[in-house]
Length: 249
Image (cartoon, rainbow, N blue to C red; front, side, top):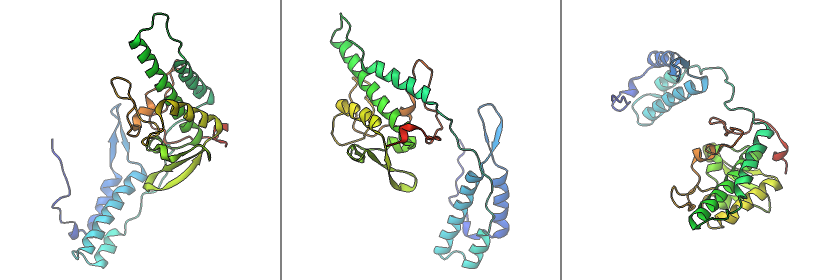
């Protein structure tokens, strides 16, 4: 496999007549889709490459390899303009309610008459997963946090008295989001299984034995639960796009 990097390239020799051509090349770039078609890069994605180019020229100037005048001229590139609709889709409350009902059904399965120790262990694991998934769905839908933000939550970030979560978002910026009493109830039900030991707020189970790991929840773990209504959290949904009573406190 051929790998092309910028290592060894004389970036400090770039001038405006070169960078304007780089911008023209970026403008023509497209990504191949699963159906074989090509989708042009979005303005935001294209601008990221311009930012990277400007940063390389800044580093060359700091190292004394290019003058400030040549750097400024080479960086004088117009940004790509335009705006794309956000990814994701509206999630009706009926679908969320059906998914929570499925979790509730799994968390309250009665023991079978001929249940053995192994069957009991499986039922308890299924109950624990259901309580965790219900809490995850309630927090995700009720607070509007991103999947990655939810996956990064630790137990210490949860304040049941204030009904708040300390979230670390893009750029490592912290903010407080608030959840209502129903969502707090879901989280507290999950903590009866998880316990109060330090670690991730929603840690995954191990692949064998159903034991809970203390690391933080893997991002894609949130999308794994399906139910009878054939629902899953959209793969590319960053956060909730709509207001709903679950967001009230």
